[in-house]
Length: 198
Ligand code: IDP
Ligand code: MG
Image 1 (cartoon, rainbow, N blue to C red):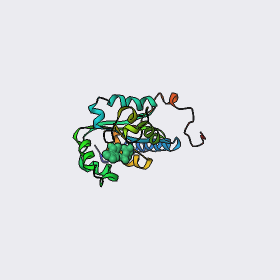
Image 2: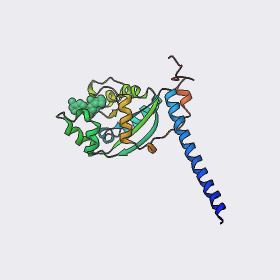
Image 3: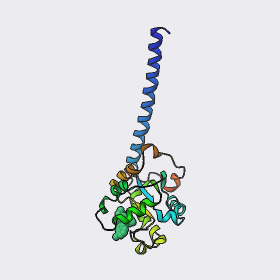
Image 4: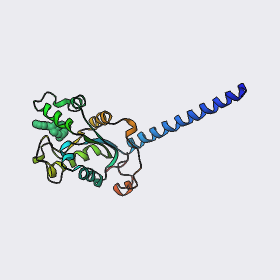
């Protein structure tokens, strides 16, 4: 191939590469634009070892799905002391921390990323208060737990913590931006958009 042929070929490849990069950036920008416009949030749920050992994982996932929250990431992982010390940094000095760390690392857990309008608060409401035997009936902890430690699920407690916790447990490519066909039935048209005064 002559020199000009090679230059044309390289030019075509560079052009194709730049086009792919442009499309990827466009998709990412569109995603963040939609999230900002529609007050969509993402939050982290951990299905704890007591739920897995009691065969409740499906029931827990089902509750969040039935509510209308969208699963945008899900996987089974085994936690270790390092990630637990980070995740429960607010509790590491408590005398019960070693027991929680042992409990949470002895069996695998399921981590889940959920998306929806005001998802952080909505998931906390479904989860119920920390001590299972005091949690309201109808909440996950209220219906399935008698314990403070074995309380079925973890749920992020603020938008800021949700962001940090999702980054702790998921790689970006493990989170999916997919269009749920049901969303038109779950929300009213325009609900959650900037000019929507609910
Ligand atoms: P939360 O899970 O409702 O957000 P946190 O105060 O953040 O509650 O505590 C994290 C987890 O640590 C709880 O879900 C529970 O499993 C455990 N935990 C909290 N307080 C105690 C306690 O007093 N004894 C034993 N475990 C506790
Ligand atoms: Mg907490």
